[in-house]
Each structure stands twice: as C-alpha cells, then as structure tokens.
Image (cartoon, rainbow, N blue to C red):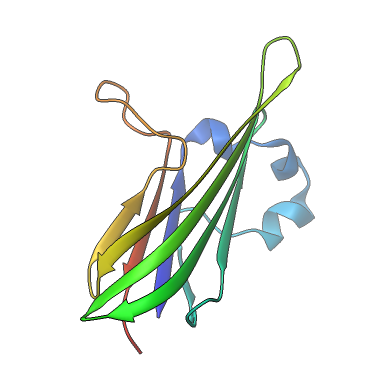
Length: 127
C-alpha cells in the first residue's frame, strides 16, 4: 500500500479553485492522509494548484525487488510569469525506496533558507 500525505504552503492553498465551495469540498484536506492501494505499474497522481502555479506529480511503482520498491516519478510544473506568459518544467526519474520507509518528495524544490513550499510524504508498505 502507498500512503500519501500532502501538505502545502498557505499561498498554494488559497487557489482560485478554493473560491468555489464545491471544488474545495471535493479536494483532499491538506495534512490529511490519503491512503491508496497501488499495484505495480498503476499511477498515483497528485495535483497541486495555486494562483500562479500548477504542479502535476505522478508516482508509479514499477518494480519490487529485495525489499525495495522502484518508483517512476513524473513531475510537471506550470508557472505564470509576471508578463502573463506560462513557463513549463517537466522531469521524469526513478527512485528506489526501501519498504516501510517514509519518502519525502519536493515537486517545487526548496532551499536551505526558506525550505520547500510543498512537500509530499509517501509511506511505502507491501500488502
């Protein structure tokens, strides 16, 4: 089983979609765990939307070997620049995670002074 705990900064929580109560009610509560059973080669997608940024992250477990899970991570970030143009950054990589460990993923990066604006925690267990 993969457990995803999402957290975000206050600025990302105050998105345009949060202005509509039906959209807010249908989305996940930040800081609340989202438990999903995910089979090998099945994606687990997370979308984070703010006023100036949209991030789409897809985690896909692809191999289980010797108590380690290899996961494919695809990250797409769309950001609106001050001149209203859109900048896109995309990446794809594999990560090996030992079973039973908590894995942190920072889709928007971070620095040592300000930290990361968004962190996703994933606990990987075998069912």
